[in-house]
Length: 206
Ligand SMILES: [Zn+2]
Image (cartoon, rainbow, N blue to C red; front, side):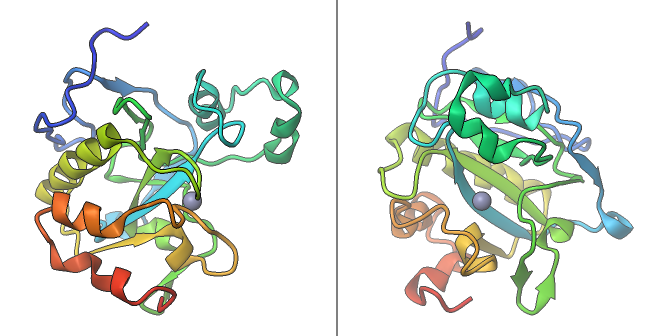
């Protein structure tokens, strides 16, 4: 089904339009669930999430369908929980390292919901959202960490990112992703030990 297998360590770049340039294992699946960033603000926060639909199942394209508002709710009982939800993220990294982009980074995806970062609410306004296909408790794959590192590097090259947080940190008590299964130290090392993720040493401090 895929044109080419992902090459997890391959460098990536984001164009002026906010879309990743074509490369093996990069898919573009536009989501209608987006709008303009107020004041066309340049995003400075990266938010890490997880999702799997239904939870714990990593086959099929339900996440893509969900972000494109075309999920067949009748195809699984759990999907009733997300009926009529209109959400998206900029990127999804699947278990095999395939990256799916739904919204260009220059526009506002609807991933964070009610949230706050450094006292500022509505994190969607100034953040980029990356979903990892997974759960709060099951380890993410090597391919996902490799792809996340190069994707984060591409985002940093295009936008003035100065912090990375989990959804659980900007919506504490409401969200739990990416969860204990996400290895922040490994991410930091993959990202070159960037100082913006040091919150991992202060869990729950945000
Ligand atoms: Zn989330």
